[in-house]
Length: 223
Image (cartoon, rainbow, N blue to C red; front, side, top):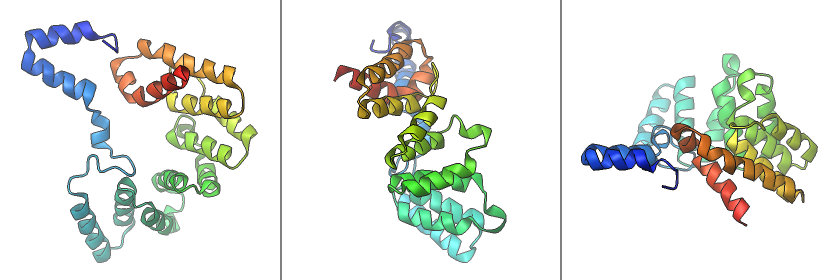
C-alpha cells in the first residue's frame, strides 16, 4: 500500500498464495542486487568471508598476478578492510595497468571512505573525461570530495551536471544536503520535493534501486 501497487500483489497472493508470497518477498523485501554485489563494509553476499579471504590470500602468495591482487582487494573493500584494499589497489596501478578503470573506481570509493578527499579527487580526475563517469557513483563521490575540501563552487558545478528529472537520485539527494548546509533551505526543499514527487511514477525496479535515496529525501522534507 505504501508503494501504491497493492492491487497486483493482493490478487497474486490470494490466488497463488505460495508463489505470490515468495514473489513478493524476493521482489519487494530482498534487494537482490545487494546480495549479488556486496557493499563495502558489509558481509552481504559473501559466504564464509573469512574462509574466502584466506583462500584468496593463499592464491595471491602462490601467484602474485594483477587479477589475484585486485580480486583480493575487492573482497577486502567489501568487508571493510579498506586500508588493506588501498594498499593492494595502489600496488596494482603499475605498468600496463596504470590506468585500469576498475582499480581507479575502487580507489575512489576506498579513499572517500577513509576521508582522503584529496586522493579521491586525484583519482576521479583520471576518469573525468570518460563518458561513463558523468552518471556514475564515482562522480557523486567526486562532487562530495570537492565539497569536503571546501571547493563549494566546484562541488555545485558537479552536482548540477547530475541534476536531472527521474535520474541520479543519489546525486540529487546529496545536492539537497549541500544546499541545506549552504543555508539555501528553500532550494534544498525543492530538490527533496522533486525526488519525492517522482517516486510514484518510477517502475518497481527503479523504485527498488533508488529506495534508499527516496526515503532519505522524504525524511529531510519531514524535518
